[in-house]
Amino acid sequence: MTSYFENLPPARPKPGGVVVLAFIATLAGRFVLTRLGLDVPVINDVRVLLYLALTLCLLLEAHRIGPAGKTAGGYAVLPIFGLLGYQILSAAWVPSGAVTGPMIGDLAATAFLILVYYTLAHWDRDHVTRMTLYLFHIAAWVYFLAAASGRGHASNGRWAALGGGPNVFVRVMFLGCITSLYLYFRSGQKLYWLMPIPAFVFGALASGSRGGLAAIAITGAIAIVAIRPKPRWNQLAKPLGFLVVLSIMVALTAGPVIADFVQTRFVDATVGQGYTSDRDVLFAWALRLFWQRPLFGTGINGFHAIANLGEGERYVHNLPLSVAAEGGFVGLTLLGLAWFGLWHAYIRTPRAQRSSEARTSAYCGIFIGATCLFSGDYFDARIMWIMLVLAAVHQAHPPGAVPADRISHPWSRAST
Image (cartoon, rainbow, N blue to C red; front, top):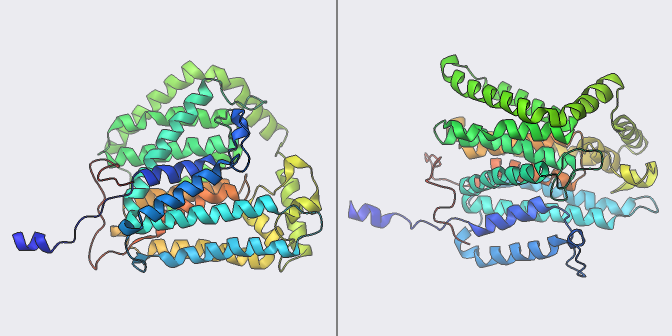
């Protein structure tokens, strides 16, 4: 027995602080110090400092990550880098007057973050994903409490927080709902993990984001088709009853605060007046540009340069249509290959061996991808790519090994 344990490889420390730093860098987005009243040349964009710190951390931890070449599903990131590289290259044929610098920077930042999470997935995918899901849950609470206190609301009353707009806010709220379900099942179905869901749904409604609501509906439909659950009502009665009671309490106590807003935004404007936030105009322009330049598109940021619909409408707010307009058929092919590669790498893991972390990460990625059909630009899709990479890529296991699905808490044996 002693010789058996002596022959086992020593356990590697798990990533800890570097995962937190990567999460902050991802969620911070384009945050600039001028929002805090500071003006520091070069590092006004917090990405500069955060990405340098991330690079230093990964270099310092390189000896813990393990040798390259032992990553299952690593091929899935190649089409993503191919798409991002092609989009950067498309700056070579943009129309005159197109400003490409900021978008090239966003694409490079997206590629960097994907590379960071690919490296972390090679280190210990399930632990990294577990920590990331916990961090999204914490972030959802922080965003909700900040918005509930009245800080950061948009000018039209829509809920937002911490410098992000309502469409960012709704993404964080529904990621909080998904992580609540993950924590509920992982804890052995302890009901207290379901308590945040009514609050997060309330925040999502208060954001006024119709695209966010459509995206969570799409995600739910995909989950039902994929899982094909066989409900046992004796097991569902308790959590459903718990959620119904909490939802009624939230509606009675806080509902009047947003009742008029919800009526105006979702019923009067959307249903009654057919208000689409000019998405129909943007989509029509994108299709027109695609038909005019079907092979290579207009080049990066060519949509804004040609359509010239004003500063408020600089991009299409739909990822596939944006790629079609600015990247043409070549860009659409690369986008399709990127999604297909991630899906193929994910399903290569037998269903019985897929960890709950990988499954939850996949649904988080699908949700963010669905929101990219209604709002956001290329950089706003970064969380989609990251979560799908975490679902598809993992360190190669010995034949027959089943990844561990539980540990005592997400920070155990954490390294830097």
